[in-house]
Length: 74
Image 1 (cartoon, rainbow, N blue to C red):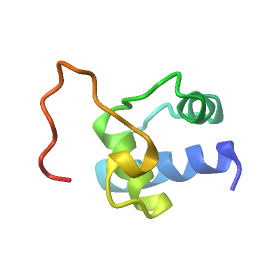
Image 2: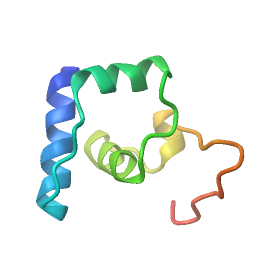
Image 3: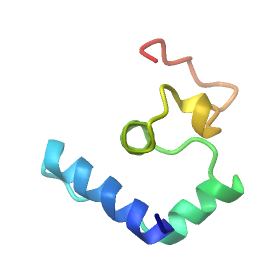
Image 4: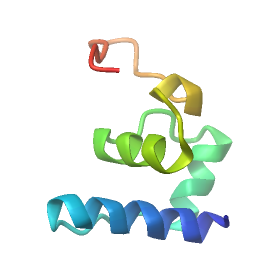
């Protein structure tokens, strides 16, 4: 799946559950892959986990900022 296709699937999934449009693009996915963005918003992390079959954020290489309270739901 290309970056653009992944971004589209994330946007479609989030729209289907919230009726809100999210401006995710293939360029943003590239930033995630490079590590330029290492803690995307909660909605993006949840959608990416679901689409990519990851059980938690860490499996996708995401880590919260040091001053962020750990999310105990995952």
